[in-house]
Amino acid sequence: MNKKGVSILLLSAMLFSVSGCGKTAKRVDDKTETKTEETNNKLTIGKVDLNDPNLEEKWKKEPAYGRKIIINFDGGLCASTLGVTHAKGYFAKQGLETEVVNSPEPKDAIATGKIDVMVEHISTSLVPAINGLNITFTRAVNTGCRTMFVLNESEIKSTKDLEGKVVGVNGGIGSGDHNISLRFFAKDNVDQTKVKFKPVESAALIQAMKNGEISACVLSDQYAKEFIEKGIIRAIRSITWDDDFKIEPCCVLILNKKFVEENPITAAKITEAHKQASDWVEDHKEETADIVKANNWGSGDRDIDLYFLNAYSFRVSDEQTEKSLNDIVKDYKNFGLIDKNKEATDILKEVWKPINQK
Image 1 (cartoon, one colour):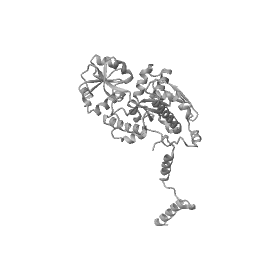
Image 2: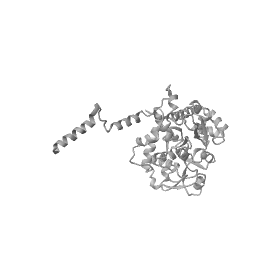
Image 3: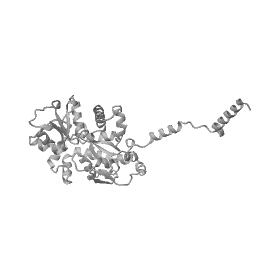
């Protein structure tokens, strides 16, 4: 048989193998399409309908169904909504059994799955989340809580006056206070290259100002209140009181990222329980102060705790939270804290997982 005949036979055999028995050959990209369809249909926290009449049956399929949810809460006033959610039974109303612990390293504990839920400041948690730590945010917790101070007798009147000066930061470069300071300077057109930062322990910051080692520092409002009343320090910039920052959330509800992916219904119930408790706190500051006092949370002084409960808003919308996160991500990109080549929207898709997501 000549070469032409062999070629015809081979071609016929190939055609028969593809179309034999009336079957159609499966396209290579069919698997990709099926996988994409499965991904699109996969239940996520943003797609959970908490009013679904079949929700219980769907929930039973999750690994976390029926197990105790571990909540980290250290008694701090800013995170008090988390304690209230547990104490007033909002978790229980969602069918969740919870246990409260106080981990010394909560961020590591939640990333490794030792705890399920915690509250922490955006300034200390956003960069690790973007850089791959196994955590995600599902809602805001509250506004306010930190302010930049100088000594009362200091000649410094604004952040602009800090050019050529040293600013103390608890936790050092890359810490939450450092990141907050950078945002103050960026907003006020301060040349950050002319400001030096010095790591100083929190308890030593005011003394470091008195010694002339530093000219300013960021402090917790609750810690600073005593020194303000004694006339030792005064504020020059604040995320609590200043109009351009006071609507931003300072803290967020943080869950283990893998937990949220594998247990979207449980994660949605946790988030909804916290939302309901937060709404209650916002409308019942006096009663919240009583709960804080009764449980030995906060400062131990009911009047001081009530003062700050009234200063903070515990009802921050998901829309405002997303806008603030976008603004913070853009700032952090400019500061070189995160990859400048990544789009803010793409970054938030990985770390921001609210319920009822459109």
